[in-house]
Each structure stands twice: as structure tokens, then as C-alpha cells.
Image (cartoon, rainbow over all chains, first blue to last red; front, side, top):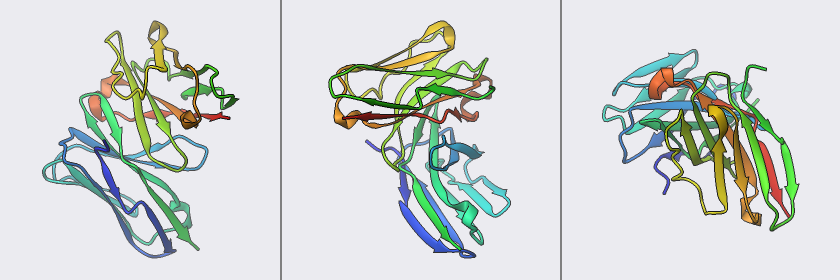
Length: 109
Length: 116
């Protein structure tokens, strides 16, 4: 059973466009993380959100945690080719960390 | 090195053989996780170790899969009588439990297993 649903699963956009990736669950998480993975490497943490309604900004990336702590979104402004990769959301319950299926983003120059 | 180290990086085996995958976590990290990733897909939770507590094995797909962690450090994931559907990248991650359940997972580069 996939606890975390991510959408879209694939996204191909032109450089300079904006995009939003969604992560949804029926479960409540104590915190939610977003990771980015490049081919041949392990995922690397981008951000952790803890409080319901929390918004965090990391340069051109904006992360939001839903009020009920069941969902999250990642918004990228003016995408760059360097943003290409697999974006994974991960929900924390106690110490267990469950990952979504991922969103494969391709930014075309 | 200071990161999570996994070996082998690549393993090709024949169906029915046993394989062992090794993970060296970051020194001092008490939490260790194993995940499986099929081609281009998300991470499937396999097992989690936390200090001296009993491991959470709820993600192991069958009794052919087992894992141990000796001395609270190195972990070995063993797959017995491998099947073609076991082909995947096996990722190990460790975390400093001092961060509670908000701490960063540090991943190794993974062990790519191919079962012929």
C-alpha cells in the first residue's frame, strides 16, 4: 500500500517555467521531508517541514506543509536545467520514514 | 570517508543464488534504514534499525529477505534464493537520532542488484 501519493509522476517543461509537485496522504505525519535524487546517487535532503501550514523557501523552491499535516507541495519558480531530477517526498511517523513514488522532472534548455 | 558506504556497488547473480549487501553508516548514527528502488521509481521501505531496539521488519517482501546490524554499526542485507523480481537498487541510509524524527537521512549510493 502506497501511503504517499505524488503527482505528477513525470513532468517535462521548458527552462523558465514554473511548476508544482504535490504529495498527498490519508495519514498524518509528524514531519515531512523533500529529497532530490540524481541518477546513480542516493537522495539528498532539500527541506524538512514540521508544523501544519508551514511554508519554507529555499531560493527558487517553496515548500508547504498542509494544515492537517497530511499533504505537502513543492513549487519551483523559473525552473533551470539543473533542477532536473527525481523529487521524492517522505513522511515521518515515529522513526519510520515512508517515501512517495517520486516525480521525475526534466527541464529542457 | 564521512558518508554512508555501500558495497558492492554492482552485483550480478544467477537466479537461486544468495547475495549479501553491506552498509557502513555514518559513525555515531544510531538509526539505519534499508530501501529498495526499482528503475526510476520511488523508495520501498524494507527494514529499520534503531539502536538496540528490535528492528522494524514490516517492509521485508518475503522470508527470503533478512538483515542484521552488528555492534550498532555495519548492517548486512541478505537475499536468499534470489529471483528476477529482486533486481533493483538497494539503498541504505543512516540518521542521527538526536534529530528525532525530523533529522536528515543520509544515503549511500546504493547497490545495484541484477538477477539473471
